Length: 514
Ligand code: XMP
Image (cartoon, rainbow, N blue to C red; front, top):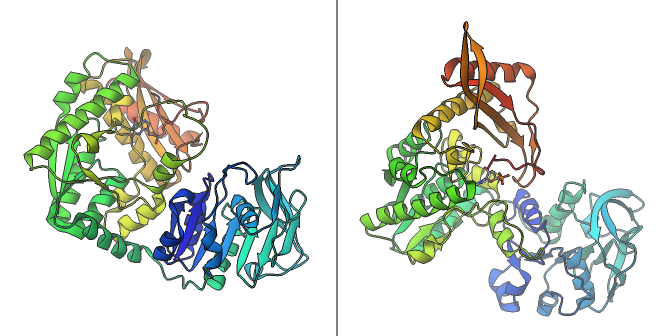
């Protein structure tokens, strides 16, 4: 196993990902939470120091525990990680005028174990840089093995102690051989076997859940989304009937989704599942409202009320399961900048664990989305569930902008949405798209159907590609596809007579319309 010490880089998660992809288990620990003892307790075969936004020269800037360099472990420092290693071992770092961001080239000037099988001396290689400071004098024992225009010590090595430092970022895809360099570090230099798999993760996670929970009870809110579904299936495997799942059905789910959750979890997996149909209550509390943030808040609060009520009925619990993923964890400890502006309040159920005095069980917090999907398949969840697009907590309620919600409008939208997704699946495009959905617009337009005039709702279709939901681009459907979907919706959904396609990217747009 490999320990990654995080100095707050935006791409630390990619280091973890590359290491796992090479079949090696790793964990990311923030620099201020590691100590000589914790490193010994973790027992890594090697340590990677991440990049970070701080300047090594700055007063009180983050450091690795000094003892790390006396434990006999191989260490790879990346960007800030390289600089702090150099500074901590007696070399020098400066802040030059010249900074290097983006694509750059390094000249390989020497050989070292890190470059073995990948880069030979004399080669010119593409890398990705993002640094202000740079190393200008090496500690004793180090030699330079690559240089770049902005970084005379773009790669350095102390072969005897197995310390390596790179100024560039091997973890990003813009460093074409980066993944191989990391693999060489974990396999050849640290001697990891590369036998770690999702099956191994599953066993470890189950053991950890059992240890955390003991004979106590765990509650899990199921939404039909990938994360909560996988978390529930995993926890069930660990503790069986000590897990009780609650599906709070607010009436804003897609066609057939609540039914699928019930049939998969209750019937197939034999998981204790409370299905509470609460659409009346939700609609009543939202009556007459159109402001998106107000809707989100009321839906969040109502969700908590209903969940709490059902939890009491089953006798409460000590633990609450959450499908928190690694990117969520990183975001919440991120160093970047001050408080950011809230564009939309996504965290719909915040405060629940405190209010009910429950501790959290978060078995997915070390994983990335696609790893969660792999784990879900490993656990036997159906592909329709595991491969599902993200779906917002407030569901269809935030896809009917500008007019008060009614059952009739929700039904219209649900039908149109189902046709759209059916066509996307039939065209084999579902997996190429990050998210696709329909939005029922608060406008009626004139049309001609048969020989008479119609005056019905207009619908917007949205489909985007994205890797993390933070930025997105609209999906370039061909005209024949859009025309097919439009025809079907107008012919099959009475009440809609016009279909449009949203061609906005994010930014400046957002993925949802409200
Ligand atoms: P936006 O619209 O901000 O969406 O570009 C980014 C991602 O977040 C989802 N989203 C939500 N998820 N509760 C959620 O759980 C919400 O209130 C919410 N609003 C947006 C959106 O579907 C997309 O995946």
